[in-house]
Length: 77
Image (spheres, rainbow, N blue to C red):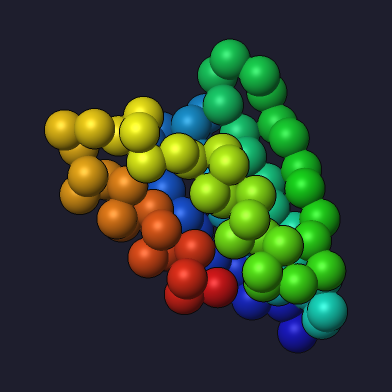
C-alpha cells in the first residue's frame, strides 16, 4: 500500500511529495529551477536528517511559521 503525503505546494512546479512504499520512503521535489529530483530513504531518521540539511532553520529567520509547517508535515510521514 502506498501512502502519499503532500508536504507543500505553491503551484504545479513548486511542490514536494513523499510516498511511503512499504519499507521505502520516496521523496519527489519538483521546482521550476531544477526540474524533478527524487530521493529514496530506508528510514524516517534518514529522511529527517536530509530535511534538516535541506531546510536549515537559519534560512527561515523571520518566517519561522513556514519552517514549522514544513517540519510538522515531514513528521506526519
